[in-house]
Length: 296
Image (cartoon, rainbow, N blue to C red; front, side, top):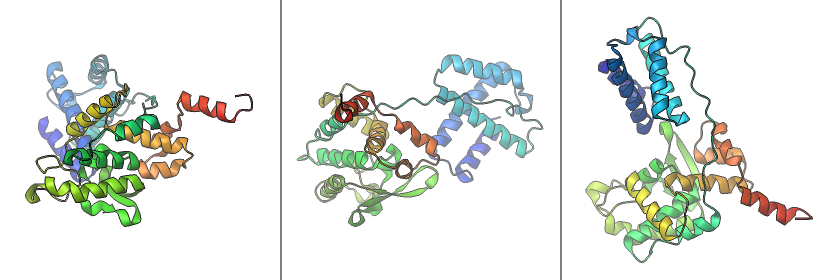
């Protein structure tokens, strides 16, 4: 059965143009499914029926409570069985009547602007790595990049004379994002003072943000940096790379930005994904009431 999964994964990479993260997640879901089928006594995908699928999803739901994870798994299996059906490997698609769970999107936790300022003040800009971190955090918050976009951005993607950067997002979709003056200032200083000290021509490949070995930073490396800086800043919230992206979007919406513009900057294909940022935290609401209500 594994050969069918390998063939499908190749289709996802080459024809569907999915990101490597999405491909890895789908591959993991399908491998878990094959393990279940083996335990269940099924050796061919044509033997999979509604009963087997319901048993699989029941077990998965008990082990993983995240609705989004289960919804993605259903999506992975729907796509896979459709592929098997279209390729005439199976005659009947058992996933046709399986519906994904309704996802209730929770407002993401964001940092207040005062917390953002404390976080951005933490790196020691006299140190080459500290200056890199300062530039990276400023660009991260200024542009709302995904972590994968941040670590892969290249010097040739910076168009600071036009106050924009070019990003290759999900599905290799290119977008142009405005960048603020503070981010431009610090990234420029990093490029002049620190990056030449970190760069190793054979390894750096034009990547903007480099580790001490001259290679691009890893997701885990940035996660650890954020954890350390947020702790030093006295921020008690669970700060992770996506927190800065959430904060970027929320602060724009709270400031009155048009939702379509925010959607474009974030690279969301569907505006319903962006609408989660129309939530406004209670402190912001209360402050507006105090500021603008005649009896506030």
